[in-house]
Length: 134
Image 1 (cartoon, rainbow, N blue to C red):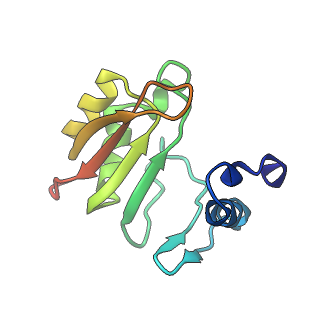
Image 2 (cartoon, one colour):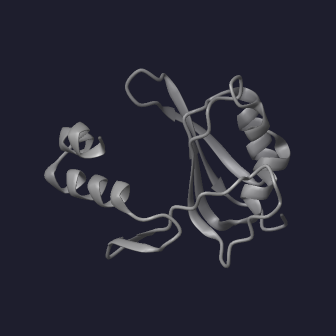
């Protein structure tokens, strides 16, 4: 289905190649996407405390359903867990732009900003990890 969508081709041939590589990566295995980007897709449950990675992450793409549909994923405790596994200077992005989400992520140690959203979405959030205490 991902290949049939060919979403990356809307941008460039290079984006199409990366899009295909990212979506075809096996789970739980680190894969080199380019000279500057490695990806490890991990299936885990952030609502438990069982996820303890060997190292911290540079980028967190938080694509949970919205706070109204999946509230257990949008708590201060979840954001604190994510902050603990994010490198200082690491990036957190999400399509949600709710004020409470932004405030909770700020409390968890991110410097937050609103960005223009993708087509059909007015805004989204990006945070940079600045607090090494968590």
